[in-house]
Image (cartoon, helix red, strand yellow):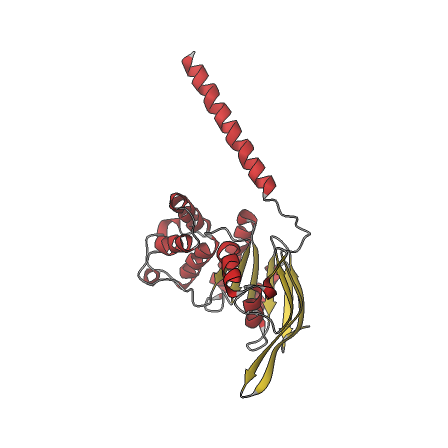
Length: 255
């Protein structure tokens, strides 16, 4: 009798947990038709030698939830500058940027930093890993910096590294990993704090075509499982076919 009662209690607890998870999922559901980020009429001008250098010239774009968007263009076309604008690392000289409805273009540095810490992940071409830390410790560090409670670290780090196919290599340091594996660690690190937007600057530039294809496969997996939007820059025509949308940049404008 006691065994049946315990079994019932366990079943009830499981049902409550499932119901709670469903409620949380519903609460955080995102309207796929509503833009995550909107860029309107953005211009960026730098002063060089007393002369204005117009890098961005009236950019209009939208990022929809759970999409892979690519900014394609040659070096110097303005795509990295635009990525910095989207990520709040720089502000436009003119125009507006709304992220989750918030006026990114009108925020202070501190306000943008707080948004980035919670909502945006970055992947850099040079991986940006701490050389003396293992893959596990590199991902854990990102959770520390984001202020995630310590009790969540272990499960989240292991999940992210398993997601990118490095479950068996998590205790290796960067110099013990291939370029493709280091990029996967960088991806795991960038998604650990559960951002809604992931920005990647030429993430496949240092990789051969096979490794590049694997990284794009990882991107597609995390879009599906982590419910994240990815915006990346590239000049590699071989990976464009996996994108939901491609913006072609020439001389600071979309064509």
